[in-house]
Amino acid sequence: MITDQTTQPDPAKAAPCLCVVVPVYNEGPTIASMIKTVLAQPLVQEVVIVNDASSDNTWEALQPVAKSDARVKLFQHQVNQGKGAALRTGFSHATAPIVLVQDADLEYDPTEYPILCWPILTGKADVVFGSRFIGSTAHRVLYYWHSLGNKFLTTLSNMATNLNLTDMETGYKVFKREIIQQIKIEENRFGFEPEIVAKLSRLKDVRIYEVPISYYGRTYAEGKKIGWRDGFSALRCIFKYNFFR
Image (cartoon, rainbow, N blue to C red; front, top):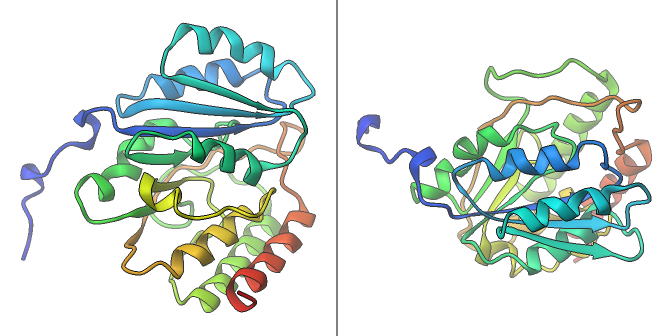
């Protein structure tokens, strides 16, 4: 049966329903403009920002943004703990029906929120992953070994979970709020990615979708933070959360 797409709701015109959780560490020069871009998206109901004990002026840069828009909820860790810990804090304060992870570096484009939320808004999905490896959207050409490592970790995760994801390490993950708030996040750093995939795979009747997204990656000179140690940590987490639980 072919569905007439003209009868489908336009996600860009849906009522605000999205909580954007932003873990932040040392993004002082660009964080204010980045949050303003997020707030400009029509689907955004609230933005939960967790400053993970930045050592630069990130916290100061966030103050006028938080004061200028009541949708912004601002939290701070006193000690740096990592992305997973910041997301754990952010998820616990989400109240909107859909929760989306947005990295603070704008490697991922907030104007694509309607694409990411479409499967949930139309009742087809409970969780959506944005994939950098499907579709024909724009991608900055960067590190070959990072790409190869990502595909290796995704394949290993798929073998353990019996899912057929193309981009397990993607920064864009979207959840129905009741789904993500029932999962206990244990990893403090980038191990969050394989951990959440393993735990989602064990939830009964959870529908997971992938959609193509653009990717505007940064170099290390531009502030990229993930490194080879995080790759080994991801490998550890794949085994830990799939085979030893």
